[in-house]
Every structure is written in structure tokens, then in C-alpha cells.
Image (tube, rainbow, N blue to C red; front, side, top):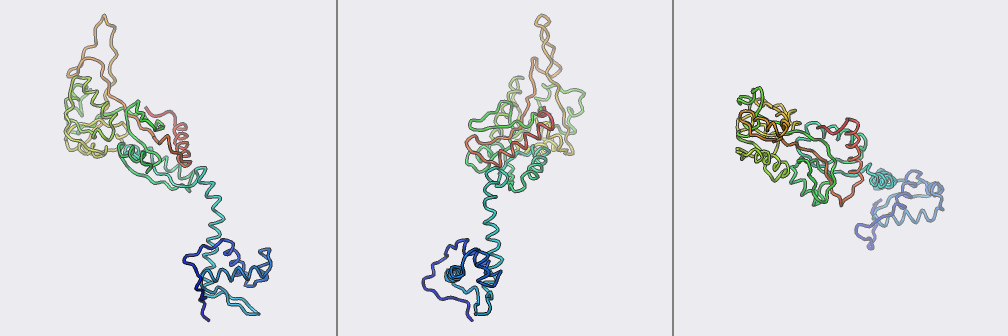
Length: 340
């Protein structure tokens, strides 16, 4: 017997109510219209009409019916697991909606700078995935300038950015993650790599490897301000975007570089990391200013600090992001104050 049902009135790609699929499954499982009708708390004639309607819409016969038995056709057999999955997913929709509304499900797109990926980001991703396993995390490595563009276009929900203290772009919220001093990365064979003490004046004479200003303007300006305050102009030998690349170029002897202290965890053969001492306090005016160390300019010039913040748009709300921010905040509190 041909399973196809000829119907010239069949519309293309019809929409079928869930009610019809429930009724189909009831008959498919009972293989008896009367018992299926009882299970559905309805009489048999409307159920028979509903199955006939479903067969017309699909254009195929789902059951072979005789006075003694009801059997599924091949088309009916093929639809049973699909109909079960469809109804199960339909029953789950309210839970999915509520989970998405309170941030336990959905999608969260996070951008990050490479320095966060050394230690901080992996532990937060692991903790958040454990807390919200149904949130799909999309991680995008991007520099600060790219992150700001992505935030403006709504293509990410938040980003981890490197900046100088006081960074506060309009329209963004931020959570301070860490505050690091800048340390000096030197070639291992450089004369200053093994010096007992580092004089800032001598350091500022060295060729500099640094990131382009566009990727972190506030931090770039802070580094240049240190040179200008010492009466010097930076001798930029090379620019590079990623901190790992900057350190690799230092190992090649292209110059020295100022990097966040967290980068020290990136151990590259041929590179030595050195911290500079804080500037000495001035003596009372009657005694005169402190004498400058050899190669150092008089006055108080401090090596700048850099900060890492989680930033997100003040105009867009995302429940999953709110949960992530809370997760990071709780981790910072449990681990003590922000690193300085």
C-alpha cells in the first residue's frame, strides 16, 4: 500500500501544532485509538480526525488501520523518535527561558589581552563554567583598541583590558582586576642585566621595544611621560602588539621593554626581568634635594603602574555577564585584595 496521501490543497512547509504531535505519539505508543483517546482525556472521534488532519498536512499515511489492529507505517515509525524529541524540547523551553533570564544559560562573549591569559583568566573561566555550565563562553584575544570597537558594536559583552591608573572611558563600567608595577625586560647579555642596582637615567638611555600607542593609549602615554619627566626622549627601536612578542624581541637584543610584572611568568631564554626601586623621598628643603645616582636625573620620577580591568558597556545588560562579574568579584575577595 502506498503511504502517500494525495491532496492538491497541501500548503508548502505547513506549521503543525504540538497538540497534533502529542496525539500522534499517544496513538503510536498505544496502537489503539480508543486507549489513546482515554489517555488523552478525549473521545475517539476527535482523535481520529486529528490524526487524519496530520496525515493530510504531512502528505503521508502514518498508520495502517483495520478493524482488528493499528500499525505504524514506515513514515510513522520514522517520526516517533523525532516527535518525542520535539515534545521534550518544547517542555524544556520554559526552563531555558528562565535560565537565560537569570544568567544560568545563554552566550557570553569575552575579549582579553594576552597578559590576563597567563594566570587570571584560566581560573575564572574554570570557576564560571563550573557555576554556569549551560552558558556558552566565547573567548576572543584582542588588544584594547579592538575591544573598545567590539564593545561599541555589541559584538562582545565584556573585555579584560590593560591600562594606566585612572582609565575611565565614557559609557563603560569596569571592575579593577589587578594593579602591577611595570618591570624592565632586558637582554640577558646586557650590561644592566647584572648590575647591582639600576639607575633610571641609564635605563632610559637604552633603545626601547614598546607596543603601539593605539592599543593602550593611557599606558603608552604613562611610559612616555616617565621619559619626558626625566628630560629624555624614548628611543623606540621596535613596536610590537603582543607582550610575548615584545619579550621575544628583547631576547634578540633589539632593546629593553617595560612590561607588567605578571609577564615575568613568561620565562623566555635570553631575557632578564628587573624591578626598579621606588624614588627616594626628598629631604627637608634646608638640606637640599637628594643627590642623583650616577646616570640618573635629579628629582622624583616613578616608574608607572599598569592596571587590568574587566570592562563592559553601561548601556547593555546581559544576565550571564552579571553572573560572570559576580564570579570574578567573589574570586578577588576570596583571594585577598587586588594585587599591587
